[in-house]
Length: 265
Image (tube, rainbow, N blue to C red):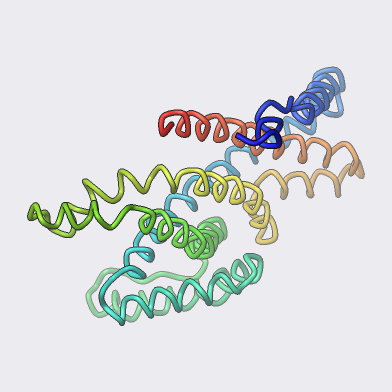
């Protein structure tokens, strides 16, 4: 190990101490101040909405991303090119633009398509208002992040040594068995760290759903600040809540990644 790497490995996390001190100061201020306690109570319901939007969108994005990655690595030219088209186009669109497009263009088109199929079959029709803005936002985040997560899965799958796949094929394992028993268990070690980073990024990007009026942390903070004119105190609490979620989860993921490295060694 070179001295620079050794120094980096033993470098004391002063930034974490400073962040902990600031967080402790904010927590004391929230507990001691009636204003901060009132703001936190107002934003408390938004915490559940933020977590729900993040978890559901990330679950859908992961499932779609895995499907896209498998298609990219498929032998079928149509599947490969179709998945690559989706990934490159969606990655080139800002999440905020995608959010507006899905909410006000994609959702009405989806309703029209559903009604065209369901009405002749007697399954009942939908109105655009039946699709809540929260679910439109979840769908947009899932569609957007699936393109990024697909590349994570693709890189992880391709990191598995071809010799192991060839050995499994020689043993007579089917394509699904090779993927389930050989490829994915090894690829997951490479996939988990960047997948965790995407999850943290999605927590932050979930704040964008506030532009559709979804009552998450950011939206409730915006409403409270506009009504009370306490912008400084309100956005202090908003930033504090997001930092607790993102930095806390980042530390958990970093510890998990170090444990995985230790197992490899």
